[in-house]
Length: 258
Image (cartoon, rainbow, N blue to C red; front, side, top):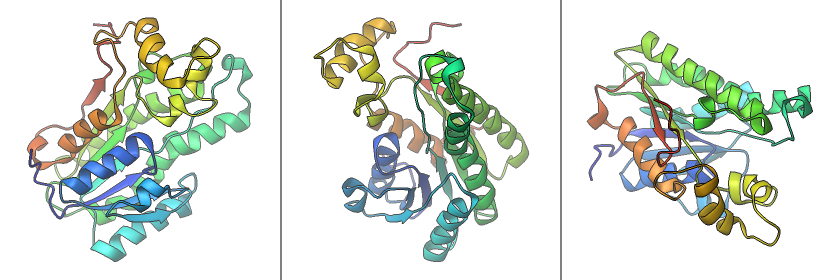
């Protein structure tokens, strides 16, 4: 499907792996000129026809450097995808230190605040400009073991709604809130899958067998990064020109709340 994104300038944060990488890959396929900000530049990102920018988005300087790189290369920004996030699971809410709260909030909430603030001057006056924030189902269904992450994602969804009202009609702002997705956040050593599986189970076994049953996922499987990327690209595109202020859940029917 042609999403009419050819030659649009898209900035994606946290695009070296997982959902962010899948978003960057799809935007490149759609003909966008993609700039990806990440603390580390993975081989997969290096192989992509995009401009990788090594920045620490937990700092204002990092957000400014990413936006400056996009503007220097392409003259402006049409699409901003705030994807970068960080989580550190713990046994419960009381187990998180102040330092952990700060680290998680800095990358999951304040990175989006800073990058949006830096990007807005480069987005104003660009026809069809769009911001898509990557939220989480945990904003609606929080869990003690990831309390700072859940709180940060809830705040990010609230920020998206506020921005959608303030920036309308010139810049659209939407949120995409995935449930469990087969990404390194879950499957890497020490990830969430390792906390939920039985001894000897591989992360993929946990994702395929344990998570769908334990979380009552209606479709019987977790989402794939490419599926989330498809929704993000659609919302960023001119085809979704009258959609703003919305928060789209992609969770295979996990959240049964009305």
